[in-house]
Amino acid sequence: MLLPAAASAEGRIHIVVMAKMRFGPAPPDLRAGDAIEWVNDDIFRHTATASDGSFDLDLAAGARGRTAFGKAGAVMVRCRFHPGMTLRLVVG
Ligand SMILES: [Cu+2]
Image (tube, rainbow, N blue to C red; front, top):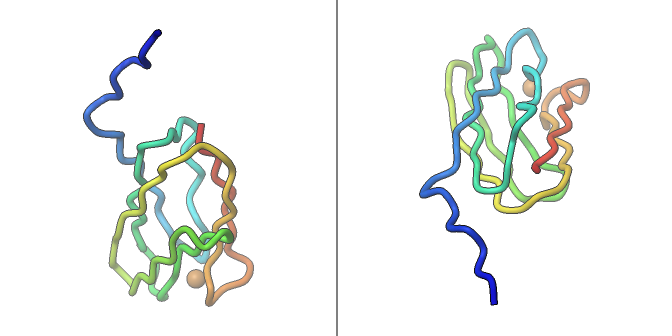
């Protein structure tokens, strides 16, 4: 029986900046086990809220926070305060 190769000790951390009422681009190489560090570089409070309920991060202006991605798949992210802010993530 073959065992899967050992996973790397830790996933990588990708940065997504929120600025000017928008999410920055989705990381193209996001993988299960990775995390995103959300950086609110705006003058407004924003959230990074997953449509599947897997995370809901509330960030004051200037704040940052991380969410981890445990499994592959697509997830839509939006800001609860600004309906125009959306981001589609694909976890490989
Ligand atoms: Cu917002």
